Amino acid sequence: MRVLLTGGTGYVGQAVQRALIHHGHDVTVLARHSHGLLPGVQFEKGDIRHVDLGALLADINVVVHLVGIIEEHPATGVTFDVMHYQVTKRLVDAMTQHGLGRLIHMSALGTRASARSHYHQSKWKAEEFVRHSNIESVILRPSLLFGGGAPFFMMVRNQCRLPVVPVPADGETLLQPVARADVAELIARLVTTEQYWGQTWEVGGTKRFTMNELYRHVAATQGRRHVPLLHVPLGILFPMARLGENLPGFPITVDQLMMLNEPNITDDTRWHQVVEEVTPLDRDF
Image (cartoon, rainbow, N blue to C red; front, side, top):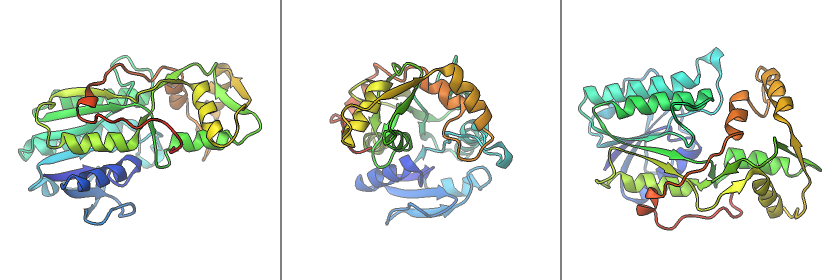
């Protein structure tokens, strides 16, 4: 299959490149720079907000759309609404106009109509546009990703080096991490799997962790078996995050705190029909 991959040079995208190539697909990556491209991939330089998508869609069979952000930068026009909804709308409109009918769309676990966070609200808006379009789609909502230097787990690893490790709230929020490589493999297989078009899947790992358990697990891989955890009340964290949002390099936003304060788990196992052997959370973060 000839696949157009957006967001292909990011954390997830590099793994998806690898999986698509492994399965013999011809891959074109649309990106602003060539860093992170694998050998054998065709590179199309451009910003998805402005590039002529019609020209890129010629001879493409399937689009894999991974573009997404976890933090907004309004001064440069990088907002959740722009990067999640408007960019997706622009892509789907171009696909419809040029008669290209298949899209694998990356969303996120926790996306729903009643979501509190702006991140999940924008993801829901994009999902709804895809669902109500005239193209065939599979929408994937992966949980927290691990493997190959996952940003969240790198932050946790750094925190676990502290004498006392700060954890939001009571640390009992449930998470269900899933391997980046498994999600990439799922996408690569879905490209040529006919029966799942028109569905929305939640994608979680095989084991659930509380935040406390997750921090202790990561600390144990660093040789710290009895790491002291300091539970920081949300009443302290939210004001700090609001003040810090305007400071470069501040580690967390209000939106991210909202998401960390709600369960990120699923009972949906349909994706195991496609990827049967699921990677456990071990040492590769």
